[in-house]
Each structure stands twice: as C-alpha cells, then as structure tokens.
Image (spheres, rainbow, N blue to C red):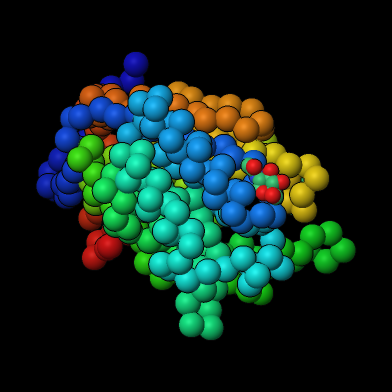
Length: 298
Ligand SMILES: *[C@@H]1O[C@H](CO)[C@@H](O)[C@H](O)[C@H]1NC(C)=O
Ligand SMILES: CC(=O)N[C@H]1CO[C@H](CO)[C@@H](O)[C@@H]1O
C-alpha cells in the first residue's frame, strides 16, 4: 500500500468534539404505510412505536409526512400548529414507550406560513427539538414533472441537533440529505448520527437513496439512517421505501424492502471511534486550505 506522508510543517487545525458517550443503543425506523386519514395514521404510528420499544429500541424514527399524504395540495388541509394534535399524540407515545422519538414530519402551520417539520421527544414525552426542512424540493421539467414544494411550504432556517444520553444527533428531512453541509456541520459539532425522515420516489429511490446515506456516513464517519413511508402505489406519490441504517464505515447495517416494516440496528459507538481512529480524516482536515462550513454553527 502506498504510504502517504503529510506536510506537517504547518500545524493542522484540529477541531473535533465528539459528544459520543461510548454507550450503545438500538435504533428503530418505522416504515409506515401512510394514507389520507390522520387519526388512523396517528394510531398506527403509536402502535408501531410501542412495538419497537417492546423490541428494545431506544430511539425510534417515523417517516416524512407520516400522517398526511405527500403532495403540496394536501399540506394546507393537513397542517396543524405545534403544539397541536400530532404533537400531543407523539409526546404521549414517547412517554409511554420510554423512547426518544423522532416524529417523522408533519405539515406545520405557523401564522400564515406552512413548514415541513420534524418534532423530537425525549422518553419523558417532552418535545426537545424541532427541525423545519431547510431545502425545499422544487422541480419543474416542462411536459414531464412539476413538484414545487415552495408553492405551499416555507423553508426552515436553522440546523437541528438534539442531545441524548448516547450522544448528540442531527436531523434533516428528505431533500436535506442531498446537501452534504448539514451532515458535515453535525459531525463537526459532535453528532454521532444523522437521521433523515424522507420519501424518495421510484426514480430517485433506486438511484440515490442508499448512495446518499452511505456518502454522508463515510464522509463524516457517523451513523446515518433514513426512514421512508411504505410504498403505496394507489396513492399520488409512491415512495421507494427501503428504510436503511448505514454505519460510520459506509456499510449498510440494516434495511428492508418497500412493505410496512420496522428496521432495527444496534448503534455501536465503539465502531464509530474505531472508524475515526483507523482513517483519521476527522483530525487531518486542512482548514488552512479550504474553509470549514461548520464554523459558527449551529
Ligand atoms: C421522481 O423525481 C425525479 C426528480 O424530481 C423526477 O425526475 C422523476 O420523474 C420522478 N419519478 C417519478 C416516478 O415520479
Ligand atoms: C398505516 C395505516 O394504517 N395507514 C392508514 C391511514 O389512514 C387511511 C385512511 O383511514 C388508511 O387507509 C391507511 O391504512
């Protein structure tokens, strides 16, 4: 193997804070089938979270738009305030299950604006963070497809990290995963994982869903997981499914197909440290050559 030497005449800027505690935990991704009745879907979400907890999960993730159909035309009708009915239900189930709950996303109404928002709860049922999707998915290819989230949604304006006894965790929603800066900012601020509720479609799913998770994971040597709704070909938006967990080495450690399922993975924080020791990119960056996107954030 080629031995590389580094020019160490200039001190490398070392900026690395891991909030990792060395404790391992069990992550669960609930790949729920989502339809048009909010109450039913909240009930199903609740049952799945309790089931995941019964199977030993410590952190449970729900998919993007788990209680409303995915489509800009539905968001105004399904939107609710935070706190509101969904927050109440999620808070109660987090407490009952005794887990951290990453509540997928719901269309949030705030004054005259709508957001695609993920709320996060601790095992006491307290809402400890809220992430509004930062990058809105706007695409318009004449004669082919138009999906313009900005028609009804406004973007969030900040990065979101939350604390657990296992370590700090970063959140993005769906299209946010395509912007590597978010995961970089999270990793350099000590996050051990990025969790993305998301709903890729039948074209971008096979093409990029796993690739993007592996890319974010290997670049940042952190766990990355994305939780999709189950596929429903009768709905207006068929999701790819395939909720997946990737380890800090970029390897898929748990995944599924497109049906309803719960994906479980043991998150091993020793593996995270070992990966970072084995390939020390976290301490060998050259911020004297290029800027660090995480400076001054979050
Ligand atoms: C999925 O989204 C991509 C990117 O916007 C688009 O090009 C493609 O046509 C969509 N595929 C389906 C099956 O809707
Ligand atoms: C997962 C699940 O049960 N989703 C339900 C959401 O609500 C609609 C309408 O009641 C049901 O058809 C879906 O099955």
